[in-house]
Length: 462
Ligand code: BES
Ligand code: MN
Ligand code: MN
Image (cartoon, rainbow, N blue to C red; front, side, top):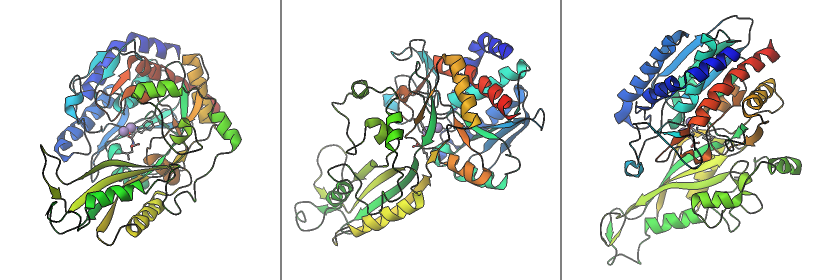
């Protein structure tokens, strides 16, 4: 991979400029107002894939946003790597909290990224990360060092639960035939502590609506006499955790796989500072399920969180009113072997059962996803581990992550393929938040590390 690495080191400015072009396209999948921009982003990528010499480039329309596909098949007897990523991004709101505009990428230094970081929506999640693969592949092609076959599938709907990619995968099993799926859409522990993500949590997401009286009421005339939906909703939500921060929904923990003491001891070896964690978030202490460490609470344990809550009067000044309705959006992060549909049903049954007679409740399920755990005894893990060792000079630590990528479990079910999660972002990169960024160190380390994965994976599997 010597010529590949040489090409990378000689084209760093070009690689940054090209990522900037991608980041300037506001491909927000959740908001229909951005539909044109999402489509433009797909077209832009396809053109770029053609430019760097990939074959079979397609912008594949779906019932939602398009999928971009490309491949390089050099020899059918060699292994095939299927790279997955997403070009869609989260909405940039709240815009006023960005120090520079979300879709005008700039490089700024931070304490954690002294070499500079690229600030823009999608810089880390996931444009900057899947683009590392595009650049690594370009470098291998230019150096004539691509050691195996490659398929690239970049979707535009990950941030909205991949509804149409699931359909595409089911209908295109032979097109997607491969030996391993490679994804950079997660993080690592720190720039001097490489890690490989070995698990993702699943997700169950619901919206609840509590209805009291048939109209908003004067809180003096009616206050004290009728149930206030906001009061009721907040009480119902509060009751979903007990004093040990365990979730009170009957059956919620039934299928949770408990880790052995050995596995927990192994996990505890990953470096983690409770103090640094609190300082970075300006909090006095962490909070969570009794009996588990912060690392465990954020990865191997399930959660229930309110993501948004509204109702009544929230404008300027005071308005004395008892609202007719109150709403909340609630996410539950799931771990093996919890099933998102089952958990959604348990939630719905329980939430309805705890509603007082004075209100009506409605539970609407949103997208979900299954949890995944990836093996550490596979040839792909060994190849990735060696790749990190080459570029970081250290063995990566296996770490289960708290985030979700719903399509990963589906890849295994439908294509029978395992995934290797080589993420290069940091938790502090503010993904989904204002001022999202991706370190230049991380971007280039990713581009440099990926070719070694191809090399080792091909050697082991040929
Ligand atoms: N890339 C993230 C998931 C992620 C980030 C996993 C960091 C591990 C570490 C992905 O784009 C994402 O945001 N997923 C959503 C789920 C989706 C259905 C909206 C999530 O985890 O909230
Ligand atoms: Mn992502
Ligand atoms: Mn995301």
